[in-house]
Length: 305
Length: 305
Image 1 (cartoon, one colour):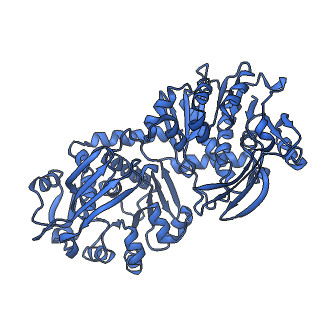
Image 2 (cartoon, chains in turn blue, yellow):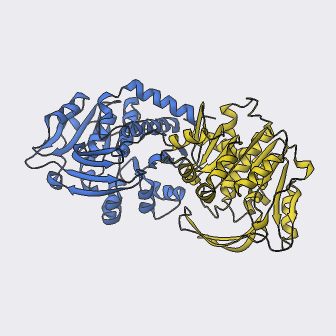
């Protein structure tokens, strides 16, 4: 069933120990949508400038992604550049040119408003809320945020996530949001803020799922070469919500089990791992659902005892 | 079946965000032996000074640990003190007084020499080798090392571990020993050095098991409060080898499966997690085998999907 994804569509410049690309397709909404498109019909809400290349539109459309909500306005597309450390666990931002993204006001096409699934990528919390409010009958809504909003837009963020079913953040963000350094305490505090499901992403160390009555942990997939971790967290989000949308799960109605959510976390982990195998979105040009399902089974194999 | 454990028996001073203890029983051989004693008959080889307290001897003896190989010599027992960071992931050493440990020459009592299992705690590689050479008919031998030996005693260390069945080290040590930052590549390189089984400990993030034909990963146990992580890696080692000794497994004869080793990794993780629940060795005064087996089942529950 169809999924609405909101966030940035951007151009990225990325430097890792494996190489450097000066300009390639990126952005949270791009990664989330590409990842989710292997599971469900995905509809993107974002803004690009008049420099956005036809081949990038074609890549998204070629994956069946609905681009009716992709606004094109005069000016340049959001540009971000960063450089990763030798072990890929740290990165520095070299450039952030918001460009047309600075005035982004998400407007949902009529056809998007009744989609049952919603993934709010990392943008200003008030904009995330406005998208949520434009929709009717959402079964499952949630999203991501980041340190900047947690620190400087705390009240706005709390008001926004109060209406979410799930929150997907990394461990540092969970600690910052909750004020607890212990992740179990952090999770308990966050589950009091509204979302009944919390997924904490830990990069190469995997992910954890917390609900009041359930707990699940998966270690990370061990790649022989991590080419470029950019977008891996967004691809995790896309796999997580994509799988739930594909299955038609409905958290609010209580139709979802710990097992369902755990498998969604595994699909998230699978998609994050594929993302790192090539620069930018390259891996998604050739990836198949059968490769995805094989890696899901690999997770089962290397974690069972 | 019986297990010989070699390493330090010490007094520790530890400061964590939860409090401070100026002097308490510690040392790698202490933690390994206490942990292993829940699974198998354990025989300790170490040295202490004439300040070693009767109550500490009693704690070890009370767990059924054979102390015939615990040498008592004039002088003071090895003393170490350290302070942990707020998140417990880093620590600084404040004091290292080797004292009687500086001249430690491990001598195995006759009754130890035919024990089938051997765990070599982190001491100088040449001493680890001398212990190995004093034994006959060992089924399974392995141990731990640290950055200091990897960097400054590399040839001696390589000669030593060439004769081991398994090596248990942390991720930073695996990278340093192999020269690879990627853990899969690091593991492949280390498996060429002699040990057919490598366990990489990742602290709160869990552990990984590598063999040429097998791979297993387990996430860490999420404690609500980590009081003191001192000794957790050694308790992991004690649970790992203790379980294998209890089951009577014999790697050399090929009687061991990936499943057996995976369960040994889980028991290692269980024992490491209990260690962190109290200061020093306190948790082992009251711990029961039934608590251990319950936590083993908890691992199964929170990792299955």
